Image (tube, rainbow, N blue to C red; front, side):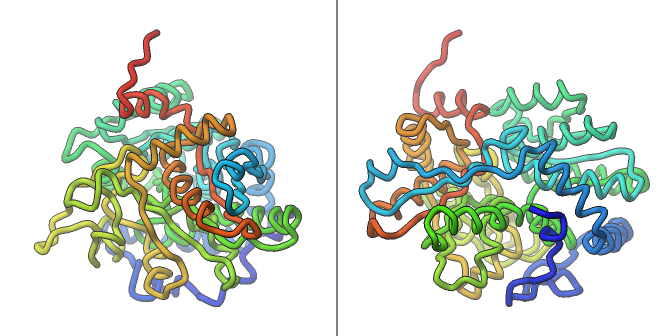
Length: 411
């Protein structure tokens, strides 16, 4: 794929965001005054880079040579036979360097940080894959790297913590609140306020204050750019359904973006249903959330009637977050993207099923999309196709999944 094809010259008919960073009523820049200057600086720098063929060429080359793009489109033959319905395809983002789609955005933002003359990088991480990707690009470019991670997530993802440290990153555990992703974002933002001159914050998902949702989306749209061409080659038509898991929403918006103007393609985002849609037991923002502001933008948030953020739960650390990206809220409001959820139990069943049927161990995040996508395939005619974005691989989750299923791993 050429560098010029990554420059977003043709946007979908939904022209978002606007110049204020708004996706309809969603998005915006809800930050302390001290962060307005770096955000405006970042907006200007990205607007210039977005139009610069040299930047796009560097990005394309790094995606190919460092990250390992393009990723494959895999026909899951055994899984398809098992369900006896629609043909199931997997977009293999799990095959990328560092193990997930997160490297796309980390590469793009690292190149932007170098362009801006920033020498220090901070990031937040939940499941650890964004932290690992950030540590990798910082090692590549010789940038100082500090990763904030909730203490609970550090316990769940000890392997990824070691991987980050192995690549030279400093990992700082966060003990506040639920000790998960929301608190890690808070600490990263506090750091940025204090060190704006030399520091760039590589936010890991399509969330936060403008320009982050747009910027992260642009760096991940390569997923659907590739899959659209690959599905046309494989089936001579576009997929009938595209399914992706949704935490903040980066892999999902990347998977959906090039299909937004294809009304015959159903787009489905799958959130974390946890133990069920009961307060504090899930992270399904469209099933139990309401409009509010959190960590930089206006969107759907899990909060009570007094505006206090509710506790969340998911077997997957990467989906365990109280808010969803504003662009997803926008497309949900307009009926272009459908949102569903999968429970912990359904996720673990899908985790086991793909492993045993195809020899591919998926991330627990991706397993939510698999759970819904497989159910959809079983209820669909054999002439139809379901494309599931396999956003990451499950090496990092084997211990957590085993524990959740009551299995003790002995070394």
